[in-house]
Length: 533
Image 1 (cartoon, rainbow, N blue to C red):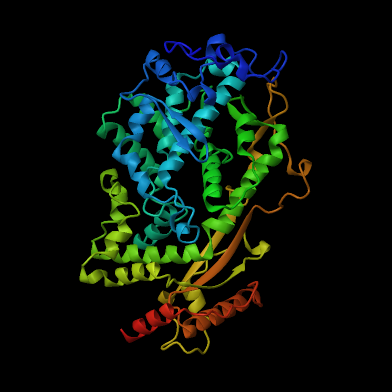
Image 2: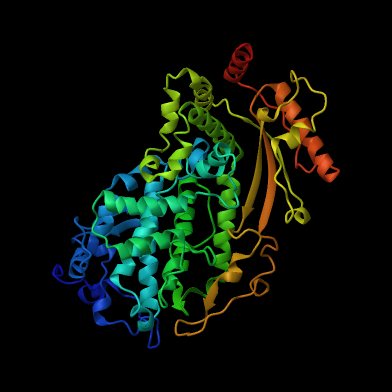
């Protein structure tokens, strides 16, 4: 029979046939759960019954102006969002994320990666809810007595709103465009970050849309987004590790983008994130994982590094990225720094998204002709040409100095480029791929437990896990691109790049010589057109 809607659904009581597997004997993780804390609905129930979560929210004063919603997702299945979270979802600030590609220019290489920051944010909120509930239920009354429904709401909103501060084409904006347009920009200590903008955007979202969230919750959500746990009260500090974990970088944001990016690009990973979410508890105010999952935690970081190598830093995608950056820079000059100065105001920043490329493409300002030409080249696949790359030797990584364009052009010899290569003819990509904590092993900062009844946690040394695990946790590569696709330019860049390697390391470090390229008729036509202008 259908359970009454005025109370929470207890699937074990109301649908005993759904639970055929034997339950653990005494001493299990959930033995001290109160009878009325089984307030969740199974997917079988959702098929025929309106979920009863809103009743719980209204009873606790956190119902919001809208009813809760269930969203079906190809990665996570059915995701439930309570009323106040729905209030936040249905705002211009969150809906803007529909216009931001999650993987930026990687979409030009992986056509399946058409997903946006919007669905990633919904998924992060969903996983944040799951982790919060998993920790609350597995960690005993000692933990549950410290947390409240308001804490759960704050974690959910932080998961939903953690990416509100991303600019056009996501990380392209803050990693490449802003340093180009702000001369004194320090990448190691930037004056602006997308996390801080996400925090500001969230606060403005609450005010602008009159969402019924108290100031204490707003402050807490801001701190959760920026991972600022300076004001975290004892017994609740673990909440700051759910969405943005600065302790060891194991958080639901990483879980979600790995799952979604792998799904949409078709690049497979070996990590089992569902097991990681299941094997957790809180000990000493820290999120800890079951010791049996230590290799799975390593696989999490290995999969992340693999996605960086295969997808996020794909050589063609980076070529498009640099063209987008150059087009945005041209527009920023013509539009009197309208793009680069928008970072100082959420009300201006909200106007920026991926559609800015179309604004450039169809503009009529005479000064934007170069920007329009760059967008046209992207549309016709006349991209900046990847020339080659080399791996920085292991012993040089600690003191590595980024290579700049002049380092390459000063190494050019005789070539057929009229007037010789100029720094503006090439792009150098100083690539760094790590396990999320630079050259450190992040798993050294992860805490583990042996059994769910344990009161103590511990670290696990890498040598006790497997001798096949990496000994280094960061690599650096240097790539070079030619903005001009003509053969004389590509050959000149290639030779200058080889000369640079010989100057630095006494021998060429690149894996393979530059390959001969067949140019399409369109590319030849575009090249001839540019040369006659």
